[in-house]
Image (cartoon, rainbow, N blue to C red; front, side):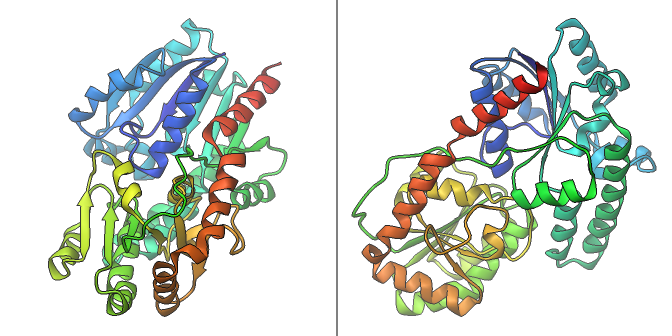
Length: 392
């Protein structure tokens, strides 16, 4: 099949959950299909990644986002949408659609629908990868922001995005909607009847499982640290959970691994030498290798947490808030551990570090579930089969 793929950001390097999801789909779909990739970038530095994407795509087209020009179009749609709408991109996508006899146009996120022409909408060849219910995610994100003005702006943006999505789904001809969580899929189906939906969950790569691992008392949290919910989680753990752990295990260390940490995050390592804020790292594998516990201390946010599945695929013991595993398939203590309060979180971490071998069954169970059911290869194959079925 020939596919156009439209993305709101450059997925390379794959150093965030969203980017990993797009890159893995590209990697495995490209083995049997031709992909023409179109995406928005934020800086000139990202043009260099076209050559990396060409390993998986027939063509790669990158367009620099113009945030200031988007202000003139705010009456049409929310900023998160219009800042990614580019006339040249829309024209090039339609031209590719006509010239290459495209079978499917796959769009990541509703924000990118403004780059799709009426002709493509009417072709019955449009697939929208929802990932999450976007306006709900934006609304939850607003709750995690301390600055009152920014919190109001995000809340207004969430409301505008809700109205935009409502118009799109009721008026536009979209052949298939895909979701990464069962909850989001069910929520959407209840709200919009008579639509084709498909669950395309988040996957993970499976790495070598290390049995009888030597404990180094290292706890890590992985994520894009410019995302407010991740930054809030890292700060909450550092201030409320880690001091309790350190009191019992003075040599323990907490690594915050992710790009674009704020000054507030960087200050954590200045006040406590056992807290390490890495910023962007060259090889995330090195940090997983040295880590004993992966924590997901989220209190806000939406959608499936790629970091949970990724950690299990590395064979790590995961301790999370209940919010941190929302949208995943994990509902009991068989594959990972959950905590409600800071004190509970701390004592679960302490017990796990001091009695690491006692948790071998949980760690192995999580790893085996990913290996058997949630590899990216298996997930993308099911998605490809559905596209072939709809095409026939």
